[in-house]
Each structure stands twice: as C-alpha cells, then as structure tokens.
Length: 330
Image 1: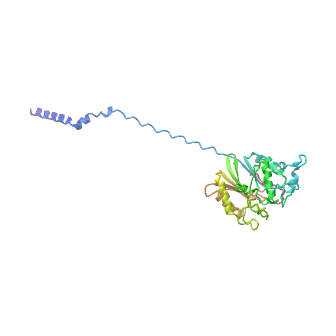
Image 2: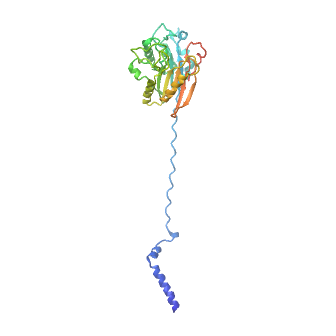
Image 3: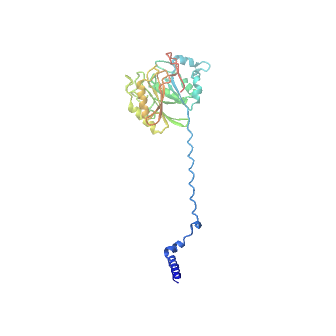
C-alpha cells in the first residue's frame, strides 16, 4: 500500500505541475517540425545598367598663317580672261583641307583699301578679290589685327571690314566703331562646339592708333610705338572674362606676336601664352614670324588642356628668306 501511495503522489504532483501557467503556455507552442515556414525575403533588385557615355563631339578647325599679297602675288592673281583677280587659284593647294573643315580661320595681313593702284610691302593694299578668294576657298574668319592693319589709315582699316562683311567673312581684331570694339569677339559654332575667338597684334609698324578712333585695333602692348615689351594685362584679362561670360566650350586667341624669321618662340611669347592660358584661353593661334614655329599641347594647372601654335608662317606671300615659303594647314 505504501508503494501505491507513493506512485499516486508522484502522479498527482506531475499533474499539479502540468496545470501551471508556464507549462500551460508551453503546451500551446507547435512542435518545431510542424511550424509554418516564414516566407523567404525578396531578392535585392539587380543594379541598373550604367548609362552609356555620351558620344564625343568631334569637329575640325582649320587654321592657316599669314595671307599676304606682295605685288608679285597680286600680279600673278590677275586673270585677264575673267577680268578679275583669282586668288583661289593661287591658294588651291590648301582647298581640300580648308573646305573639309567645320570652320576655317586665317590671318589677313593686308588691307582692302580700294584701288587700283595696289601695293605690297611696306604699305599693303590688295584687291577686293582677295576676300572673295578666301571665301571661295572655304574660310569663315579672318584675323584683321596685325602690324599692317593701319597701312592705309583708319579709312583703309574700315573699308577692309566692309569688304569682308560683303563677302560673308567674319573678322576679329579691328573695329569701325566703339560699339564694335565692345563686342569684338566672334562666337562661332565649330561643328557643334562653341568657340569664342579673340584677336590681337603686338603693334602697328610705328603707325599711331588714330586719336579719334582709339578703338580701331586690338593692340596688346601699351608701348606698341616703342619697345614692344609691356603687355596690357588688364585689357587681356578683361577681354577673356567677357568671353567666359558667354559660356563657350572653348576660347581661342588669334595673336600676332614674336620675332620675324625666328623659328623658336621668344621668352616674351611664352610668358604671354602662360598668362592667356591662366585667364581662360584654351587655344592660342599665333602668327607674324613668317616662318613656322613650334606647336605645344599642355596640361594646365586647373586640369584643362591648352594648345598653342606659335606660328604657321606665311600662308601666301612672295618672301624669299629661308622657310618663308614653308607652311601648313593646321
């Protein structure tokens, strides 16, 4: 009997323990093997494909050197059958390169002051047909600031621009009015790339800029009648700021500088190039030496690339000194 009572007591104790709240709660939990499975989290979305880089805009700018019409050139351009001067024939060797470019520029180193008579060095005056020939060849823009711009005075300078306007050729570097000087740059579409062109000369062969027309020509030296060694830094920086305000893709400075017949740039040219790049220029296109000088591609301190061509020499002329007959279409 005692054994049965002990077994009974154990059964009662287990029964009492089983009725407690903790075990009661446990009894409501489903066995692990029968619990409902939680849904799998969704897979993260595939990252989107990066956008394709934009296609680069590729354009061609053709640049030519000093277009001069010494009297042998002028005489050779005469076409008796047509009764006019045919400069396109003289420049025909460059036609394919110039015509194929999206935009083409040249330094017009003469005046179109009216005639005949016409003249070469030292006081140039060429036939109006020269402008027509440049346009027929495919040029779009002429630099008109150089040491011969005032060979025929302010009237010759003004008439030159009138003739270029008539032929549909843009021009930069000289002005007929103060208003024209205030806006003396050309913003061009070069195959989808906007380029602001500025133009300057070191001097005027000792001819003073007319007092009545101080705006006539963009001279970058303040001492242009004497030592030619003091650049007008404020003017250059101000003009570049005005160009930047137009938000072009590139700024190109066409500049008449350096020493004649020297195949290397002077330290003065190099210092000017440094300044122009520092103040926003991207491309420097030089002339005046009448012989080719080096080209240089630079990485500028702000990460831009800068390109300078110190001189392409003569485009057309009748000069006979060494290398004055050597040139290129850049």
